[in-house]
Image 1: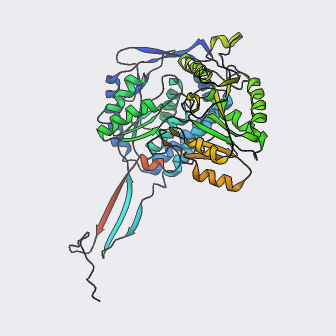
Image 2: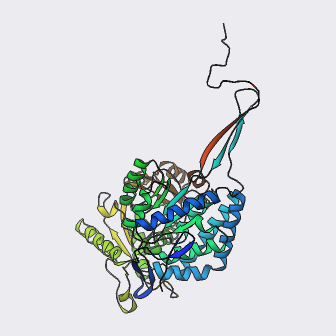
Image 3: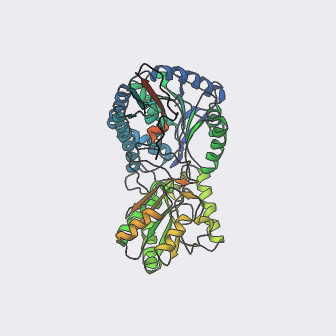
Length: 498
């Protein structure tokens, strides 16, 4: 099947006619379809249309914009199973996970709908008589959204719904690995009543479409989720062009398990955190920091359970772990396992491609646990984005907290302990945007801010209430009804004499 871009209110091919294939990572023989391999000329057309869409949409009352997003949520709710199935087919994670992905989009839609009546400003006293002072929110313009493969629906909704609710128009560039899900999302937005020129969908490669979108002078807002390396380049361009920019990038997230932890709970948490989504989450548990007293028992049981995880097509009942998204990702994971061995790590389970039967046709890799890892090892410091867990032994909570913080990233962390004092110390001391107590490093909720510190981002947050600040401008208004010139920023206070 041949899919198209949505530009200027129409479904159109790339102007060059070039296409790329989208295949099922669990079975590369399964061709989902061909999609436009767009270029700068397609982005230019999309932005021109989005500017016209912005002029219309910004004049629409915010509660009415919220009504459109509420209908979007209702449509996604009706189509949840269908969307989850097609999403698993194109990116691989089990259907139970893609249903959660859809639900997150539904939650984000309903949350955004309510914010249409809650785009609060402030009314404050003026320092002068017969004068009012207030602030209110205004939309910014065309927003360029660049989204990754691992949450094909949730992350585009995290970005698009707040942007739209605030009155902006959107040019969406989805990851080339998951173009079908993005196409369905745009179809749903149109069905819900979004004016056609308010949303543009441009498929293609990051170095072509993404670059053109970031560099376009008529796109004042960019939101990017992806690698830290690419985010750095995006940041350089946006800084030079004075664009508003939100970056959500890498992570090297640690689950800390202390001697007083509930061992069973900790085991369940790390299995889900490390191997859910095949480790392809920015919040995935890639480090397990374990206190010495519980280390050997925990690792032995963890290796046993990891080895028992069932790999396969995510649409097949009983599958625990799906494939990596493509061969390049699998090759990267394989290379890091080799690096771990070279630096003295011990592979206690996994460590190789998963083969045999239907697995031979997909990009599968065994869930892998590496012990004897030092905090300086590359597998303890660099993002792998695959099913590889590095285990580090520590003597106490202080050493665990220090190791958690001793990486370039600062997205998510978790601590398993029964000591309430240790729990609150962790919330205070861990350098992460998110910390869980007695829960894994994954599992953010749509109504709270999401993001990290250090090389994970640039200070902005997705989700929750904070993202609405990012997609809107604050304007201040003064109303002087005194009938005379009153001067603020002048010393209006009488001199007091002793």
